[in-house]
Length: 108
Image 1 (tube, rainbow, N blue to C red):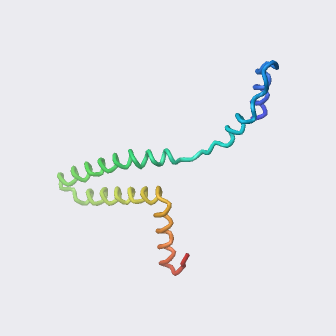
Image 2: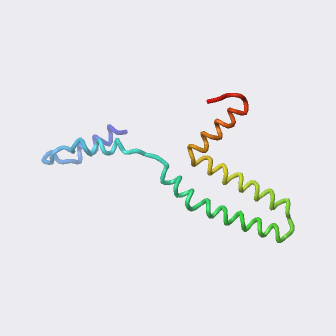
Image 3: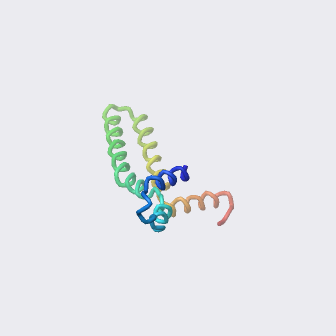
């Protein structure tokens, strides 16, 4: 696919222009792709929205007297937020992994 794109570009550039600089090709290939921005956006925006929704569900469930649903939704919501917190922090994930390994007698 890249050879086809290269051929199309070579055909479309008139021969009077100088060839493209090697820096442009190097810049396109050395770009780092990561999910840091997405992870930070989720942590800043989505977590707050989930907490508000969880609080509303717990409040409405408590007002209706459906305590079993309140504890189920509240507990599962808190478990999900704890999982998200562990997943976004490398040191927390490593610490919990070491603790779980320590339960079975493996020290790291």
